[in-house]
Amino acid sequence: MTHPRTYVIVGGVAGGMSAATRLRRLDETARIVVLERGEHVSFANCGLPYHVGGVIEDRASLVLQTPAALGARFGLDVRVRTEAVAIDREARTVTARSVETGAEERIAYDALVLSTGASPVRIPIPGVEHGLALRDLADMDAIIERARDARRVVVAGGGFIGLELAENLRHRGLEVTVVEMLPQLLRPFDVEMAHLVAERMRANGVDVRLGTALSAIEPDHVVLDGGAATLEADLVILSVGIRPDTALARDAGLELDERGYLVVDAQQRTSDPAIWAVGDAALKQRAEGGSAPVWLAGLANRHGRLAADAIAGRPHDAVPAFGTAVIGVFGLTAAVVGRTERELREEGRSIRVIHTHPSDHAGYYPGATILSLKLVLDAETDRILGAQAVGENGADKRIDVIATAMAGGLTGRQLADLELAYAPQFASAKDPINMLGYVDDNLIDGEESVQWHELSDRLSEGWRLIDVRTTGENAAGAIPGAELMPLDGLREHAESLRGERVIVHCKVGQRGHTAAALLRQYGVTAANLDGGYTTWVTGTAATAAPILTGATRG
Image (tube, rainbow, N blue to C red; front, side, top):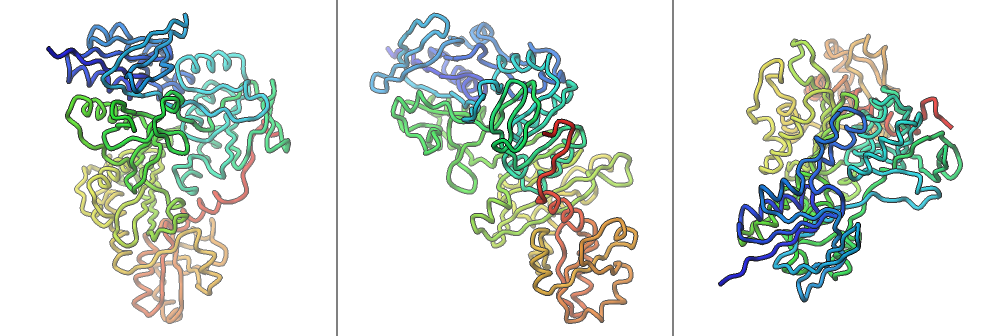
């Protein structure tokens, strides 16, 4: 007679609970034990900042499942406040210890799933113990308690969680300063796209300080840049990154990479054939090759299911990750998929970059807002390597379309042929996604574009810069050195430019495309400033000296 198998899952939330419930659906007779060190085995961790700000009013709504409910529906043996402290790989046992009593039990397993997650980084500065971080409901409760008596808050770290907390603390009426060591917010974005988010934060009263390091935390203030400045602070939030919780795996001798992340194969199996790993502690295979951590709930859920399938004898490989992510702050949405221009240029890759600034839906229909889109392509194969979108409406939709196109192997040029839903209140007859494809098609056919950060070098090489906007647009703001030749009268100047090398620009690139096409037919070597004046203004502002604003300036 075959004895029922025993599966042990260490860690709950997205990855662990997906593995546990999927295993039950595949094996009704198995004993399934879930060990969770915290108080809650299944909670909406992505919703925590929004309860801090009162957007999600009911705390109970963040608790998705309880041990009792999971036991009743799935027959799971869920043990909260229970920590896995040792793995005996030879005996195939896990030692579980009660956090409250210290009592220990050894549990034999046929298969073990590690979903231990990651912990916030505690930077080695004086007074770090005064700072709070956000990982679970208990952390959230502590932040809310401290915020009740606070007036000034410093958030260290300009990543997704840091910005979400900054927005929600601002919603509570607090004075908020974000301190970020990097020269931009949101590292998964390029600097000119992240700048739009920083400006929205500042417009809503958040003091954003870039290129600034937190040096010490005192009871009533923080020290910046080794003493160069101080900020009054009643509450300090640390959101400067995370590190994998893999001490249990390391002590068991499982293979880790140099950063401490668990190395897994295509079915999430670790270096031990009886142990799998999912979630933030495990590396992900990237679409561009190699592996890297990707901290996304969707991947954790998917890989938990995939690990369960492999354990149950129906293995299939994980799909490489693109790192699709989105954030909303003060009514602005920023979404991203794939690689950045910055990363790819650092690697020496040959790439093609496109910026556009279309309306999210037909301009004649009320309520249209501007989207800023960026597409990064392999210059040789036209493969889509990444994309970014920032705007009040439609950014998430467009990045989801591009992520799907990337998964399907479409090229940039093929975006022009996608048949997307259209009505004037939802999109344009030529959707912004289609327009990216049209621009790419033009570039493949020989048109030349110049990036905002390449302009000064081109001008120093003797190229002339021609502004084809209207006189009024030019008067409202112009690129230094530009010569005004409005598009509607450009033919009058075409002969005088014959044989010259010129870069044309308009507001967003569309009129510049028309101007460059016209001039080339008159024997002019003409390139278009990609994304026009709008992208140039944003990019140059983003790379200027850090802006210090706000009443809490030290």
